[in-house]
Image 1: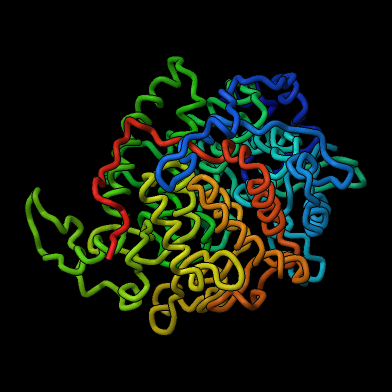
Image 2 (image 1 turned 60 degrees about the vertical axis):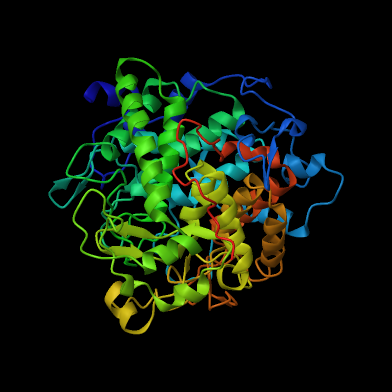
Length: 559
């Protein structure tokens, strides 16, 4: 390990330490090694839009993967190249959004390395909103890639990779080597004229939980960068290859698991507070699946990479089978669970998790439409969390964890239950809210996660980009257009809030930060995806034909 640290100019430090100029931690050294002149070739099997396949009512479900986004010159208004290439005028919000996004840029030694979580000077408490979060930066990175500015994304990927090699300790316990930071902060010393970095691997987070999703988002973003630019030199560096292997080693290790899903603690992802998502949350499983597929496309077939490739190839079919079989819920599945027998003891058991039918919540019977379906929040012994979680379902579509039929059914559900899942501001992070006694038990009476607020049924504008990407992949751009128009009616005049409260998402969140960066970048990415659908190749994966759908019937029951 010492030799590897030296290869990236790293010095062994604890996660509480910082890196200064004296530590010989120059980002430009590693960037110089991976610099490549980017040429516009069909090296990523670029196709014209007319070549995209149309099957049933799913348009181009498995064709966008092979398109990478050509990076054109930016317009004088600093708006995306996709807008300047089209004949129509961009929405007035677009220029405002780009200006706000650029204000959030963070520099290390003169180079941009990320964007802070929020640029809210009106807030009395900064807390950790002045830090660069891995998950928060993803939509910012996508916006810059789509706008022809890949350098900041490369800087971020390299910087977080270097932070991964830090020794990470919480109290007296040493974290796994592959853990990626939840966030980092750049400290400027005007006296010494030097910059330093302090990273948080969970030791400062609420609940002291390590971010499981950070590593997955890093792999997904590395592939997006590679897809967008055609520059494979970064992902092929020994350091990036090792970084991927370290992340995979954490989540593919053998243990006592009887399921291919990943066991997680509460608060280890976007929902970073106690919300009853411990166990096998859909968000983590969908990101896990997508990260495995992204890593599979980038790992080298050398001695070290071969072992992980084999483990991924073994894991993916088992994971997709499990998720498509046990997490999927539509009208027919719900009716089957409602009729479950319990205490079945055999290999032929139908109720394999011994779920008690009386545990089905009353709201679900009215919520479930005849046309539509979704991946439920969690499945574990004697427990099914029937709540809807937007991020997990959108990523399931983009990663092709959902079959084409299931993808259509998820979009059908959003249309059928628009008022509940979208309301007046897209998009509900979860539905429905938990309240009263259940809220006290599940959240520990969390004053931030009260009903229809924050992670407990709040509406998060950042989810707009994922919804738009899912809409494009399933050939339903009209849904995205409708959601974007809703967002445009409020976001700018409300100063880009972090989230909205209320059943319909009508009120600015009671503790929401203004000028929340991923609310800004999420809007920009959604707009650019809608205006230039070829960008979808960055964040979409084709269905793997080797993983045959387990569900042969229609995923959406017709009444």
